[in-house]
Image (cartoon, rainbow, N blue to C red; front, side, top):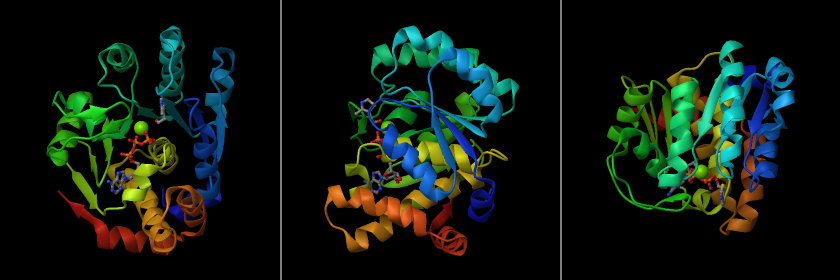
Length: 258
Ligand SMILES: Nc1ncnc2c1ncn2[C@@H]1O[C@H](COP(=O)(O)OP(=O)(O)OP(=O)(O)O)[C@@H](O)[C@H]1O
Ligand SMILES: Cc1ncsc1CCO
Ligand SMILES: [Mg+2]
């Protein structure tokens, strides 16, 4: 959906969040025009999925004992036809990839949002990482496209260049905003935006809207703020201020077809 429709519908985003950044994620959802709820109690999943418009699963601080309930959550969302976004934090670390494989086998994820190293893991391509950060270089267009083909999910690869791919159509936003990477949780919040913009229909176009929203907020915030602490708050303000026509104009000028 576009930003105008989003603001009128106030999509409810159910975040199975990590315990590092939920406050930032919830605020990003709120300022853009959605409504966040965080939960991880299995007895609440049926009710919460029923009233939600998107389910966003972040594996950043996941415990292995939570694997069965996470799969159950995604299965409930699949049955209810709610979009599911997976944010596979640091999935390339071997002990972290085991449960993510199980999730991918036993439930259907519609969109995977991760940095280049995380998405490269799904593509089966080596990419250097340092914990939660992607530090290497590679052909991000190829990585996103291959990951989409291998998983059947739309891929939202974030970084200096954002790449969105369903394995056939690939779009890119090559806009460098280094301060965006200094705030831990920008990626987590971006995953929630991806869920929100895809809540009526899961498409490359809607996924690109979410990625463009964060990039544009970062571009504007870095015009006035030059240091990371204030930058994070300025990003929230810019996300709040962006208008439909401004977002669509940014998409027209910056989104390139691959
Ligand atoms: N070097 C960069 N230049 C420009 N934008 C960047 C850069 N790195 C990241 N971004 C932007 O930052 C946002 C988050 O992407 P990033 O790849 O850092 O996610 P992440 O690694 O999952 O982050 P986190 O784990 O901190 O939530 C995206 O909007 C992306 O476009
Ligand atoms: C720092 C960190 N550790 C696990 S999740 C997380 C937040 C970034 O996703
Ligand atoms: Mg991340």
